[in-house]
Image (tube, rainbow, N blue to C red; front, side):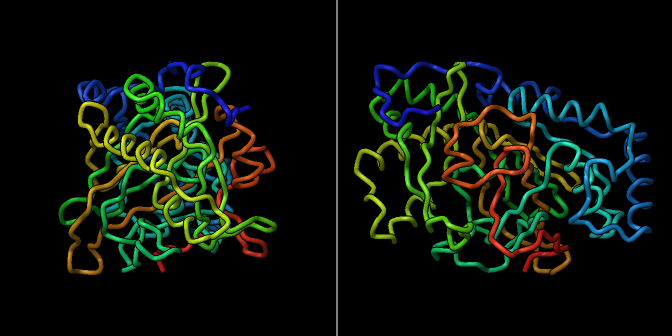
Length: 358
């Protein structure tokens, strides 16, 4: 279990395949870009057509509903990369351009359910999320960056795995950047262990109005959680840390904590550490929220409503994911029936899968 009183002298470098540097990955795209084959696409399309014709409830799709035996090697490859390897993979070539929105959702939920259990992403119970500019004020206490066109700082989402399917890219911008949390941890340990110590203690974050039963409107969780096996579990949302300051009972952010976050942000922005990747129509990016922080550049959208940048999002709870500190399921989110982070669940709200942002 994570010890919030850990001393600087006790901090050790972390190691494993989840520790990597962007330029090194950029030189080996064949290791993390996985194109679909023509045979895989044909089998996927046939299965999607069957489920669509049967009137399947998208929110209820489970791991056995999308019958695509030929995709078993892909599913295994995604799980290996995201749950036991570097923490990310990009699947390329989903034929979203010739599908209806509903068919895209069926394919995406069906594939995602083979990797993990889709969990709610907000207080409305959405298991199918939408990354789309709908004019939300990001600065507002309940504002969520994925509902804007703004640049998103490096952060993690509230699940084992986050998946993004690109239905429509932006006119310009909106590029994805990812960074190894383990590399950031080791760099902070090497450069400023005193500041790293600020981030292995619990920091307070705002629930942004999405409060589970019996919980406070804020919670505390360390950014970096060194694990007994030499691994690391990380979670970071600096905007939620700042917004939690609206609660008088939450401790004030100290100059030392601010400096630690400034250093973490600057390291993540360093091209020598992070990896930039292009999002093409039909790409699916799967990331481990425990090992990878992700960002997005600001974007300019198309004026036509049908061409506006739009990504489907999944949060997946994976029973074969890495061991987690108890704080993840006890104080932060609650757990699924299989003991994994349960996303954002509000009492009385049924799971549902809207086909567009609202």
